[in-house]
Length: 479
Image (cartoon, rainbow, N blue to C red; front, side, top):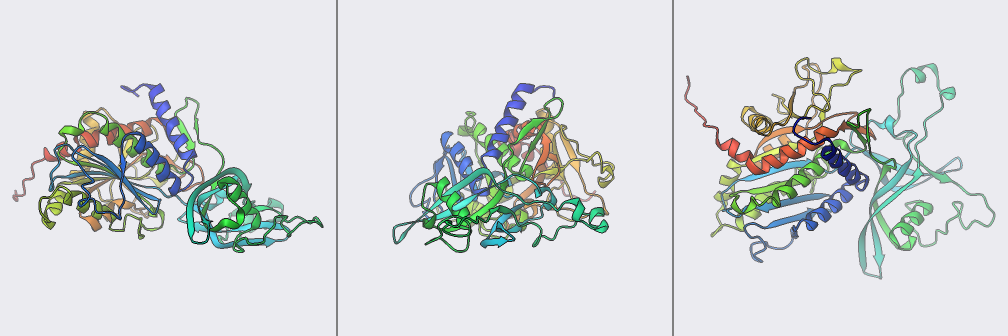
């Protein structure tokens, strides 16, 4: 791609795959993002403390906080910021379709130890068959009689598998079309029930004092990974995860094959863009606030305490504005909202070479040809003429590729956090995303160039996105 070094773009893509490898759950996304932010000089805040009373925020300051350990808000306060000024926001989501461990997961069947799993989101569940699966999430550990600790855990070892049914045992009808019953056919195998006479239990693991809701063998593995006794584990929130690492592929190293492109790719590009902008020397003269908001639960509708449907985005604007207001003025943050702009960044559908008819003929995004602006007049995406123009103009000024996507009239249209925040917060929004294949598969495909140029676009947005917006004169007279 002209203007950008191939080695730089490849190095950036490798950084992305390493981030994904280390982030099998939303909890790990936020933990790894927080580590990057702190290394870049960002200060952690607590939602449970009054920022105004403690004088926690200052012009030119860099901050972040988390909610539920699975949602993260990070922001840089411009050196010239005043209450009533604007917010430049990039929103993304930390979750992906996945198999999650049920509250009572302990199962055995015909000599196998199994783990009861629930489908989270709209996954391409057949892609989970015959994969080498690990497990990850958060675990509550008892420390004494009245103290408890939350620990993150990532068992990056193939301890689980969802085996497919061999073709020889399928009927002709079953061979013609794979149909999975999500309750019956997606329960993973953890291991074999031991039959030794001296086994302490049928699984070969001492289960005295262990939580009976989960297999003793699973609790033992988790305890070894965390460094605690299995009986100290009192609760879990776990997901299955692919143990195969992300890879740069394609004949010219132009493709990325990795889990959770949707939507860790924009968690990563927005995080890197905010950090880069905060260190660019331009923050001191910035009159506005630059924000990234990484929400949980987008794949299941966003209606949760840590989802985009919660008050967290609006609360952030209110709380930051109030720290710089001389008086308690409820109108100032509304003034700031009217000037603000959200880039809702979520993966877009690249045209599929084997299913090209699924795309509208004039809107066929291609991998390697840049960020996609997503439009839907039925408001499944929140892009309009003005907000879409801001992105196109930024791309023009910085020689960045850009594409358009509109769904066919005879196809349903997915949605994302853009319309939700536009509705709940009242912030003007444009929906964008890099193009990808195999969305919601256990392994997805995107382009090396697109990840880097998306990062450069978001960096440009923090620098001059609102300047582009302010260059538009609205003439409302009827011609």
